[in-house]
Image (spheres, rainbow, N blue to C red):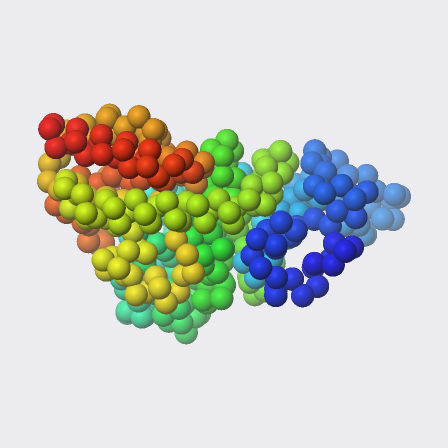
Length: 394
Ligand SMILES: *Cc1c(COP(=O)(O)O)cnc(C)c1O
């Protein structure tokens, strides 16, 4: 970062420095620290010749504005990508790249422990459009080669898994997929580009629900999709074809959220780890599913590839069923019962794994997913203790 706002040599800067300064250049807009929020459909051309040649940077609101560019450039700097599109939700960040690269007759391999709405999109719309959908186990690793067919176009990964947090061997999967000419996509929402950089590990397309940690305040929906050089053009063209653009206020709020994401994540990471290892020692907890704990079956893989952990993990209660699960949830006073995560506040949800077809599911008792927010750890522990006591006496 230089005084005039350019980002020469920014790769050498620390992550919080880059989060504070990437995206826009203040001196491009009168020196104001933050970029303008551009509300736009129409962009005027100087004359008919310029209109015919489309020879200016912006031509219409759907194709990008200085506001979407500021966020996309900040994400590119974090992901090491050639380009990033900004879409209206994390789910759209999954569906747009799948639509961009799949055609009728193609075969799609999806990890079985995937975010459920991704599975729903594949099983309904993609199947209807003639795509062959197949699920593979999260621990497949290089064994993916045996599942790849001549028409396999995309291998979709998500690591760690939604709800159960299995870690995938992304470099091994990417190697085999590329050998067979398939594209590798990864939903990297849990780690954010701060704790895992997919493109550095062989992934072609990196997907984020920016709704989570980048936004950080449970008040908006947004998604980003970042591509390497070889896949950027087709991704961007498809994004424009679909008209799936995001509103400027939400885009601005995510850029604002990025500035503090590093410090927030450090706090989420520390509190979640403290609480996860404390829970391992509590009566009433059979297992804690958190990849940064040495007890996690994929801990070594996580340690090899990731440089941090975020604030979401699950616990398996020691025995019982829905009655104990509901008693636990209803006893909580600080943890809210609600979907999504990545905001400042703690949340708990019951986990249902009935949709899985090949992945092994943890058993022993009911599952609960916890998002550890920015509250004080002592208060959160006391709240979880209330839950465990309630489950025990249910
Ligand atoms: C939340 C989530 C999404 C979807 O994000 P929304 O903005 O809620 O649509 C996609 N993938 C994963 C892994 C998620 O956790």
